[in-house]
Length: 156
Image (cartoon, rainbow, N blue to C red; front, side):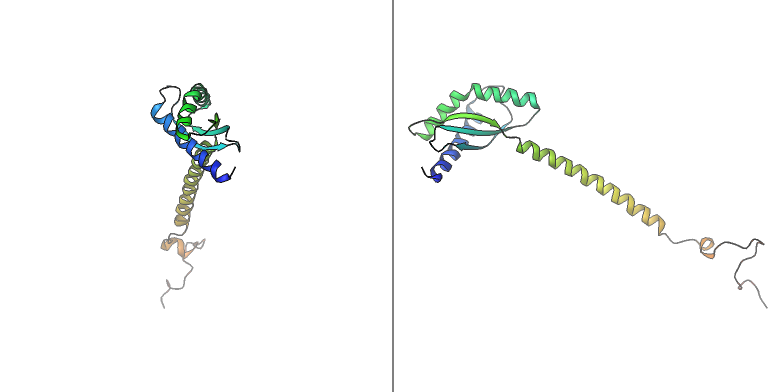
């Protein structure tokens, strides 16, 4: 079989599963699910559906269990849509890529905020150091006798 056909079937499965989960599935366990993609075997008998679930590990496990329970219903919708000789057997696989990218983005955002804070503190300390000195500070230390070191004070 051509890889073009398997790609088309995989895309049709992804669309159908996504639509079925969103509009037709009434299972309360299946919430916050995003269908990422689908892979179909060369003989079109098996398909892996990659899903992303937002939430903690318990929520993800519960959602995958709900999807496995609704697999027959979802496969029937896929069979109606594809109209091929054998309807692919669906296997739902949790794709952690979306969650990992969200966590990475949050870490980068936090690092950016921290670096901006450090930079602003550095700039503030540099401006304090570079402020012009007062006249008393620029003249220098006075003589121990209490006289100024400059000759301007003496008149002839």
